[in-house]
Amino acid sequence: MNRDLTPIQSGLSLGPAKRLSGRLVCINDHQDLGDISEGDIAYIGRRANKTNNVVLFYDIIRSGAQALLCENIGRTDHGIVLAKELNIPCLSDISRSIEQFEGEILTLRTDEVYLGERFVDESFQPVHGNLSYPETDTTVAINLGFPEVIARRQALPDITDGVGFMRLEFVLLDILDNTHPKAYIRRHGREQLVAELATRIEPVLEAYESSVWIRTDDFSVRQLRKMDGGSQYEQPEENPMLGWRGVSRSIAEPTLYDVQLDAIRRLSDRGHQNIGLFPPMTRFPGEYDDWKSRAIEAGLDAVSFGVMVETPAAALTFEAFVDDISFVVFGSNDLTQFTLAIDRNNNRLQSKYDETAAALLSLFERVISIANEYDIKSCIAGQAAANESLVADLLSFGIDILSVNPDYKTVADTRQFTAQLESD
Image (cartoon, rainbow, N blue to C red; front, top):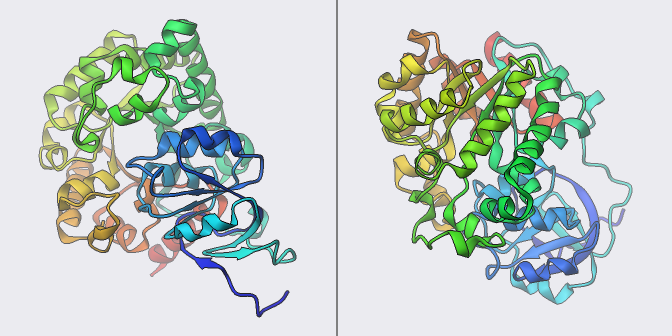
């Protein structure tokens, strides 16, 4: 290997550390997706990079891109969350000058970009058999949005204890194929959507004997408007983060919520007893009661129910939920942005975006202590479960479950760090 080679750019790595080579293709909007071939490296400039990139990023990856370069994106963007779960490297802070190399072969090595195919003999990816997974007193589960991950990483059920956070909007992305749910139902029928969703979820329930906690969808209006037919059904919103999404949408417009309930009921009726269900963006006990009542009326009396704490309102009134739940999952990304009044996707504020801020720790400790008092299982999910400083505090508060990205290295790192804390 030539050690004198100089990278053409360096960025901020927000995904798995890999060494790979591929042709550069530049994406300015959805119309450019046809230019992507299997194995390409996609550059997503500021013009295409919008708040909450989950639909765009999913379509880019599904088109064949093996890595993403971004002009500017935050580590908590849902597009980044999606890419990490699918084991796709993603670099931020890559300037538009890289567009001059479109069509050329580039090599990524962790956070560096080189011109040409380089370092072909160097391996970055640790393999399952070379990692250590010590036993811990703390339950280690996984986050999951794409059930096919279980088929690709078949050892995951052996080294983890269930699914702490399954995002149904990610599962639905693959089924809907960039079509608004109502447009999909109009074209293909409601029964097909219910059946497809149940088919995607069932292998996960079969892979684990322990609990699989499933969150109903959290599509924002902006995401739905970008889908085929979306502008016909959705009115624009100025602030999708604070808009019509989550549990309030499920109650007021239950078309897609009812599809999810029917799919879960079918799986429960087939004898799957490890299902837990919870909604996103709960603010008030009353809306949670309405959400749960609709689920019970749909025949889901054999599943367990939980709540996601991602708003300060839910954390500060948690006592009002305890009679109706058996578990609680923290959504730390939104809880952080709403508590600190910091846009999670604004890079100018990333230095102040801190899940370990005193205000956040107070909310975590409050909810965990109440959960322990009422024998309610508590779980930290999403990106924060890999933050060792935060995890150390949460374990001291008495949290039960860490739900992490579904890759072998993250699971190994989490088990090793937790085991070390327990031995100290």
